[in-house]
Length: 262
Image (cartoon, rainbow, N blue to C red):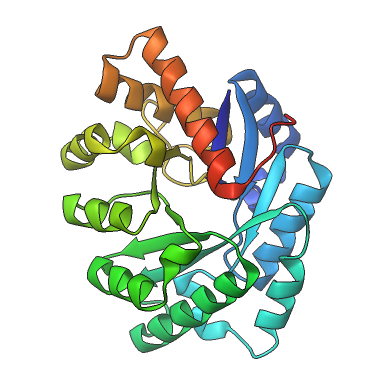
């Protein structure tokens, strides 16, 4: 059994065949999904998808690309959405200095604000960080994020970031990037992560793993991520894949407080 801990199931690229996407994932052994909010509209959509599928959970929050659009009323509605029983996390939030779609000072301000919201809600945070790892860690420490915990989603940082994230008690989630030919450093980091801090995801429809790279990603392919981790950590035999599946599923249940009803 596998849980895709980070997917964007509301994405319009799934509109033609969303139910088929679920069916293929179920066939691949994916029994649970966490669909992620990136702004107010997608947070609403994530909750709606979770309402209509028993094994889908949702998060709410505003991605660093979008934080310059936050209005005064947004936090009140995000808090209201977070009361839904299928909402299990806050995010994705953080800093992205690669594209700078929102000014960096606004990113830092809204990151702090959203960490405060998440702490008020007692929800773990889903962290997005790109080319901003030192400031991300500093803000997490200053805002006492270790009190609520969370995950660095789609981890692609260096060994220093991995250690600092783990020291804060956070999980590291790995995506199809670890199947890419040039992901040598990332694969070395995968070898070092303690079992109890390891998660897997697709970030679908993005970051499709090999051998399907270049096509739309979907949750069924999280199995390819688990298989790659098994190869990296344990030689890739069936027993090691089953171990990774069990470890990552248990960790997802623990972090997001998901019941064992599916």
